[in-house]
Length: 58
Image 1 (tube, rainbow, N blue to C red):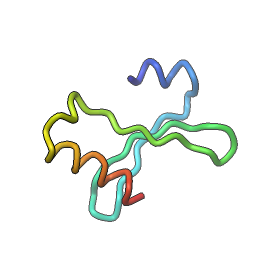
Image 2 (cartoon, rainbow, N blue to C red):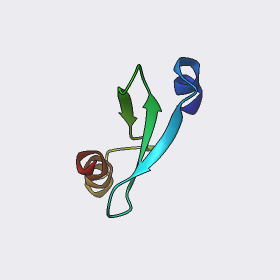
Image 3 (cartoon, rainbow, N blue to C red):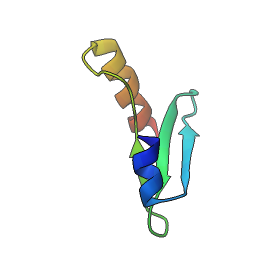
């Protein structure tokens, strides 16, 4: 995923929510940023909840 994002921008970083959850981000145009959450599988309900909660908390 990093390589795909790197082709589009050099501005790749991660953010943390107030509770310490990490969300990967890539810079866009101006103040627009793309939030990207990467995991191997979302099949497990606990993993799905963990990954989507982090996005919703930003």
